[in-house]
Image 1: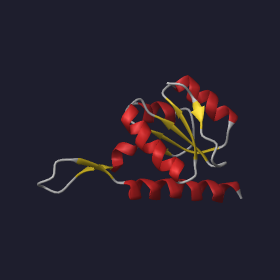
Image 2 (image 1 turned 135 degrees about the vertical axis):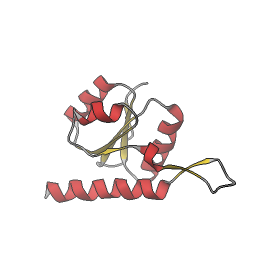
Image 3 (image 1 turned 60 degrees about the vertical axis):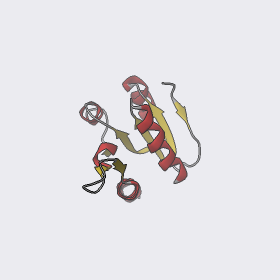
Image 4 (image 1 turned 45 degrees about the vertical axis):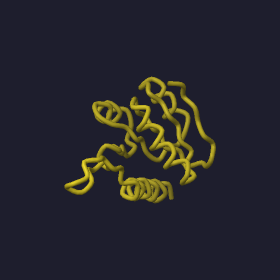
Length: 116
């Protein structure tokens, strides 16, 4: 996956996901909220990216959570925690965008509070 940055704001969030579908969904949510999103599927690219910019959070899943946790003090948000099954009759998985964005907003506020 090629590293690219969407320059919509100075508030950068790194999305480090291997799952293309999840990557597209999370990136759409964050760019709609005017975050600059850096997407990567490679830990070396992530390390390089963290070295050059001030970020608010890292969005990643699975075994990468622990690996990235050793590389940065940034909050790590696992989007899998916001995937839920529908009601009993509905077995379809749903992504809770509202709860996900509440967590992103919390990270934003924490970052701004420590920067002052």
